[in-house]
Amino acid sequence: MNIHKICILGSGTLGSRVALQAAISGYQVSVYDIQEKALDFGFKTMKKILHQLEKGQLLKEPQEKILARIYFTTDPKKAIQDADFVNESVTEDVELKKKVWKQISEIAPEKTIFTTNTSYLLPSMFAEESGRPKKFCAFHFHDVFYSRVVDIMPNPETDPALIPILEQLGRSLNQVPVLVKKENPGYIFNTMLLALIGAAGKLLTGEVGSVEDIDRSWMVNFHMPMGPFGILDSIGLDTAWHVTKTRKDSASQAFAALLKEYLDAGKLGEKSGEGFYTYPNPAYKAADFIK
Ligand SMILES: NC(=O)c1ccc[n+]([C@@H]2O[C@H](COP(=O)([O-])OP(=O)(O)OC[C@H]3O[C@@H](n4cnc5c(N)ncnc54)[C@H](O)[C@@H]3O)[C@@H](O)[C@H]2O)c1
Image (cartoon, rainbow, N blue to C red):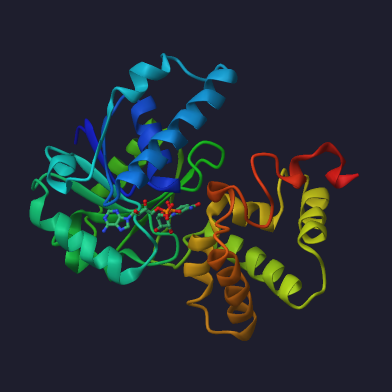
């Protein structure tokens, strides 16, 4: 199948990144969100990333030409019109995603492939609402530009013929596709990441170590540019809270309660300018942080 037009649902942290990479890769892109201010956020995020890519001489075309391929709208019908492929990046909430997929199933062309970028939910949870379970699959990015794995995770009804199409699409989006052979919350990498984040949260709420020392331990021993709390800030503490609060063990519940305090104070991580660290110059990036 030839994919020309890609529609992105949700213009937040991930939706804006996937949309930008699709435009860089030469696709026509539409970005749909319910809020104008989310579309503004998406556009600003894209400009910021383009600026960094340009500085690193990683762009083959002028920024304006890339941005001209992206159409932002709060009208779902205009967004989905003639789309060959949809990737949904709305808030990590099962009921909301069901609602969005039902709405999209009623207005999308028959040819359109449906995919979700959910982090920890399963595609089978919304396959029925999508109205086309055979053409519905998880297609899950990480941060798109720095962490470039894309997970392909079918629901039990996904047509196997879709997998090579998605693998090829993933490569065209400068990602490394991996096939998750059966539904697993967290795919492959996030299952491992959740174990790390959960352990870091437990160390913090149990007052065993500070945010900085927990991050330092990980960064120094594994030669990593950021630790678990830097990672959480880049993911967004709201997304992290949605995931953590669904876990019933007491350590996860304690960490979810701490994350909620940050959210109530308006601290969502990098996207709001403050989370465990303050941005744009978080302490963990300073040269003396790991001295
Ligand atoms: N943040 C990450 O690092 C990351 C990585 C991979 C996957 N994801 C997944 O991507 C999805 C989005 O996460 P995010 O971090 O970008 O969240 P976000 O909060 O930054 O963005 C979510 C967007 O969805 C929009 N939205 C809410 N209801 C909507 C509706 N009915 N129709 C259209 N748009 C709607 C919101 O206005 C918001 O702009 C989640 O499922 C998350 O698990 C996130």
